[in-house]
Length: 241
Image 1 (tube, rainbow, N blue to C red):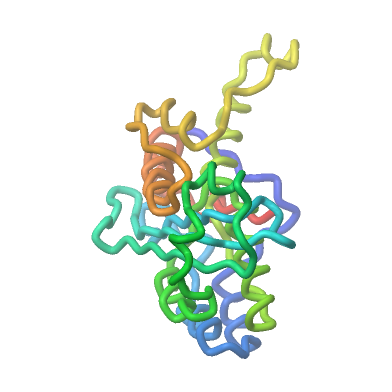
Image 2 (image 1 turned 45 degrees about the horizontal axis):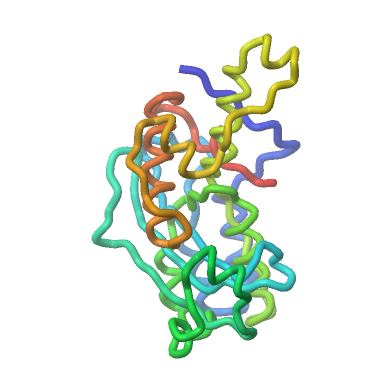
């Protein structure tokens, strides 16, 4: 098995950083989230408590778009804990565009009684606490969560993630033939569904937050089994950029 570290300029020790962030946070839910701590960088994947996280949003720009659905499920390298999965609808401040409704199928009527994100922070953040967050395409979850909290409580949030899209891209590049490199042929798709097909995982309908979270958890389990040793430290997996 072969796994190369991502080319980060620096990899912070998140266990120590969470102690610092807990002392600096003002919001009680955010302070409690950081106080729950983060695993050390040398923790092997076989001992990682993880939670797969997925958002549905009104668009792809965190500066102007909003979260409208959150799905998450805790898991480890061998088991997905579906009974502990959680899902929330979140009411946006603006009306939905027709294009976004077509993509995720969430309608205005579905959100009419949904709470604002501020009112479910006391549920969402504890469900993430103490676990490494796993996503497929980290810019959505990290940037949207940071921006949404900044809008509501005046504080952002910072956390490491394991990005299954980035891991898959890394593996595809490592195993690309010299002919493909020579002729600059594009790599296969790293969309969630196509990644799952390569590991012969079952098809799930996309663009549903909880289903995509479960799909991401299963994908990481497959990636770990195929490409990494159980002793691989988490610092070789989490993605920061």
